[in-house]
Image 1 (tube, rainbow, N blue to C red):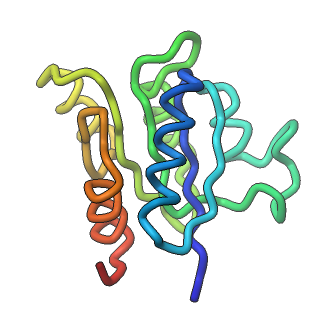
Image 2: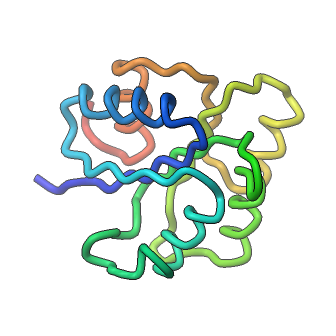
Length: 137
């Protein structure tokens, strides 16, 4: 069975911890990678700096992206991905505490496939990942 690489981009260590824990609880074959801000996300996605080793840091099939981060935020990453589309394409799901229609529409217009309000439990994440990556639930 293939392992699916997921990159979590979130400035909150607690949110990254609980999200990764809930992802592991889905029982799906996942490899989970984490970065703490937009700068690290871009380095990871472009295989630069600490993330230059493609074997250690594979291109994710799924990006779980927080919008509200200091420095480069989730919108900045969405803009960067639009200008630097990876091959093969990465599915992007925004996981945000914001339920503002403006944020939701902006994220979807910039290429996010889905927008989910935090917190997301293990079953919700399992369904999201299965449908986003076209896996059997």
